Image (cartoon, rainbow, N blue to C red; front, side, top):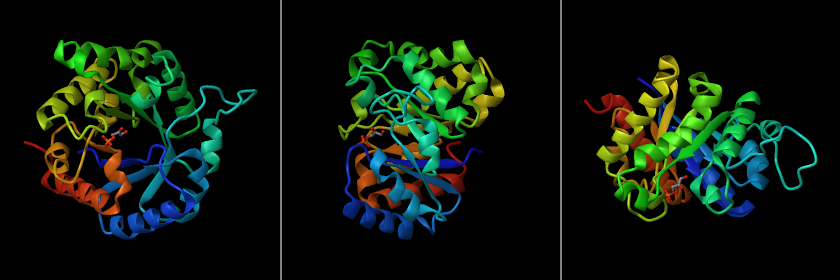
Length: 259
Ligand code: 13P
């Protein structure tokens, strides 16, 4: 059984003072939760703070974007090796709040994915469909296009031990989560699509669900067979909520997922 992973996406929230309190609360509340991996993806300026406060705990840290180039005259960009310098383990890529607002192409996201892997970090590749795409029944085609960019150009092996996060755009920040069955069905689709290229990679890829995960719906989502964890927005800014989601992941691990 794959290990569950619960990742906080703090988005553009925080300050040195408020982060310090939240990191301390996370450390205290997550330490007793066994057999679950945790990570917090912070805005770039707070990576050093994450490193100094989280080193040696059961919580890894990471970033929410990265440059597609290794080094050079790219004003305002941050490279994967810079993130590594600050002990980052994870990098969120292609989040809809970026790809919509900053017009990131699938090709650009795929290049970033490769940079992250080359630096020895773990990419968290976000994929998701709009409400209109779901309602018109083309959601699987949309998700396929988002992962095919990598599958077709790099093969399935690049997904070995990588993270994919299924984040239906209509569920992000809306309080309207996908049902466990809707999420499971899409996660299975993603895993099968990768398996078509590399069966072993498909077994090791960690597929998170993101989109209004909260302490009430977490248990039902995380127990599903192909849901390997969560990417948590709003509820990752509250240590009590995040702890409860972590406990739901631990419980799903103990009970062995859905039968
Ligand atoms: P919410 O949990 O606030 O819906 O955000 C989800 C998300 O965007 C995770 O990356």
